[in-house]
Image 1 (cartoon, rainbow, N blue to C red):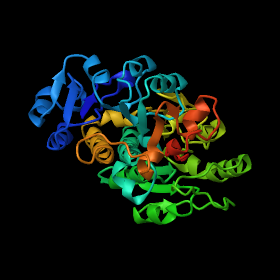
Image 2 (cartoon, rainbow, N blue to C red):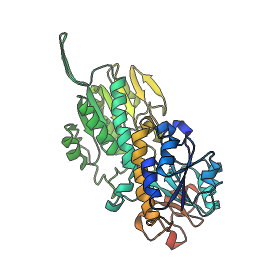
Image 3 (cartoon, rainbow, N blue to C red):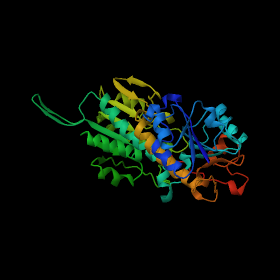
Length: 394
């Protein structure tokens, strides 16, 4: 089996799908790994390091895309690039299922079997493949640092000759993996932290990190999916939520929002009126910016100032920490590759619930519900063997 690792720089990408540590483990199983020259340079993994681990360095992208049995990526390729893949080959990465119909058509035309980390089932045996959690950990950590940098106040309490300076107050909205990491990091920096999540189960995790859990008198019912994600709330529930959160937002020096609903635009939790009610110099870091943002005033990929409040909409915080982000992602990739080629030879077992759930295209057919929706097809594939799970993580 030959695995290809292309260089990816679109959108300021700095991560690489496999690092030398992982390449060495694959090479020990007899797997040939071809790495495009410079693929890991922005993550501080040199071509020499890959070659020492047993990889072959290719001068151009074509030797990766058109000549490998499996191509592993961080983010989805452009449709014209996917169209150069070897027929019946495999693509593995963060593919944003359903986001690009042209990409799906290119994969289907080449009979490429594609697996998206976003679609990996959230079950115990798939934890080692949970790239979403890995990247959310990085994003949550960086979000807290970004908030601390942008905040005009110290995060910790300071006892100085000029008197005592109180700790900054941080509100984290959404206590998933990214939110919990933001809470933990802000707490380590000394901030006074409170957090809100529509899922009641998040309370214990928030409290365990030394933060205060914001409890709102809302009737949210069963607000959690089987995969542990927050369910989308009704418009009335969201309206009431915004009303009850307004005072907490107004009193915060920094607000970090992380609320996402799989496959849907991010819920608008902070209105422009709520922004206007915040303190001058306050900061919002909107981690949901790639999905439109949790704040109505967020400009994805940009920094705006509204009524003296700085609103940051980062779209790829993980790229700001490429060495460890690539290491974590590479280990997730290796775990999935071990399912695809347990003995070093490619063997796609679509009866395996993890592979079946993560599959987006297979045997010339779109097998994931979100991919089929993007192509204007019915939710269910015609081929029973190719049927895949409909749940996608966020």
